[in-house]
Image (cartoon, rainbow, N blue to C red; front, side):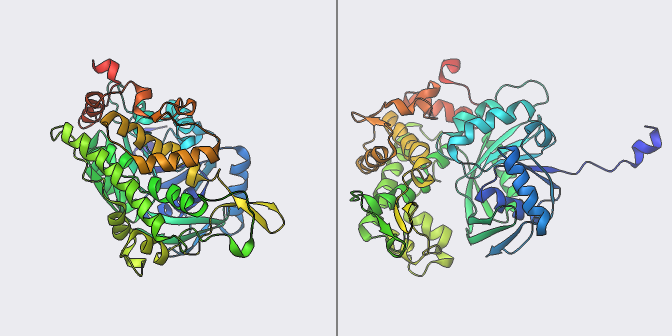
Amino acid sequence: MNRSTRARRKPRRPVLTICGSGNAGHALAVVASQNFDGDVDWLVGSKEKADLLRLGISADGLRSTGVIEERAEKLRTISSRPEEVIPDADFVMIVVPAFLHASVLRSITPHVSDNTAIGCLPTRGGFEFEASPLVRGGGAGRNRRLFGLQTLPWSTRVVKPGEIVHFGAAKTEVLLSALPSDDGPELARQLSTILGTRLVPMDAFLNLTLGNPGQFIHPGLMYGAFRSWQGEEYDTDNVPLVYAEATDETGRLVEQMSREALSVARAIETHSGGALDLRGVVPVHEWLQSAYSHVTADPTTVATCFRTGPIQARKAPMIEVSPGRFVPNFDYRYLTEDVPFGLVITRAMAEIASVATPAIDEVIYWAQSNMRKTYLADGKVQGPDVRELPIPQNYGVSTLADLIGWYSDAATESPQPAAERA
């Protein structure tokens, strides 16, 4: 290439890579196409999924319905091969269920460039422990940033893969945290534009782990709907409406779990002597009012927020066992994500902080019996199924001093395991 050709070369366009082909991946493809000044690539879990999405998009393009009506106009590459879509990415956004976070991180790590921002939408409990090696250490010139969102900015569902995604509601604001945390304000500014939602930066990632509202809402609603279930089947007309039929008792249980997590946050915050700011951990009722007040008819209580909010038509997750006959689906993400990667992580933090959590314990014991798992045993987070979870104890963090030290390190530098800091 001669000098004049080099002089005429156009500047490289920024690249955003989506990791995940589900509801959030489809939604992000549409929203990023409208708001991101660059190209959008899409990493999916298999060649078959990539082919399915390409087939759908080739027909009439991916479009959205509901409160956002747009098209995914900037999709450039859809691939199941990380080496094709990760190395040039300025932003990598992971939008897969929590149990897949570790495998996605392993697959992309060899290909992530030094100046990439890697994020999770939404993050779940303990994601920071799994992902911190991506930004740790590194050598000259490395400027990787890690971020997480408290929740998705939207309620969304795929109608037809590669063709239609529906937006049921959009939140007015969402919390963001980053590692190193000093990068949070700038990332919040950039991503607010890309996602079309106001993002509020929080200093400590622990705000997202303890302040994750889904861990109280989803298991709480499932517990409320099926705590007395004894194997009976439902027909199509009497499948519970998980939000619209939430009882006052269910609302109080969800609120109590939230209060327990708030007690954990305040105990850690107090013990830190001001080193950790956990103001992002708020009561679930306050969060519901903040996120959905514009589309909620009666925000008086947690239960009325559920019953008069934006997704009243959503039915409880079910399995069809014979034509027109259903039983509860206890392998749905309301339990498989929000218990092991939500309540169990919060319960592990509570154990470190010596805070009692009777409501959280009650729901975990009920959920694990239906999930055929054991997280809580003899009142402690020591069941065999916690071995692969991102609880702090699995990362050498077992005391309050360890926990506060890990998150304090993240404020200005990449966090190290407790054993390395000792």
